[in-house]
Length: 126
Image (tube, rainbow, N blue to C red; front, side, top):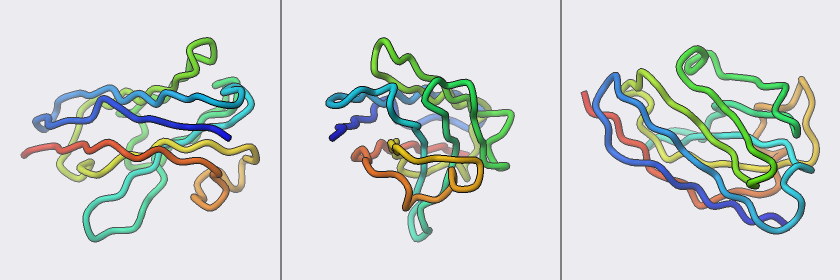
């Protein structure tokens, strides 16, 4: 069992930056690949980025590549999402998630993630 808690969301202007954190507790954090998803009002949850257990392999959605950076500190049981050059279309609730089963073909599928945080709101004003 892994418990995940996101933090760092807020209101920012277009072009601004935010850094989200996802703190994990419970079973060994380094045993899990991690991901960030987001859900905007009236839309389905969508994949943002994922990280392998070590953090050396990452996959990004096209919409955020070059602007967002995922990282993790296994010693601190924490994952981060640095978001730069934010746009109004980035407005959503952001969720972190953990999975014990990930590969190059399934990293974007929410159903493979076993544990989810409660989400943190990110609002980008125009």
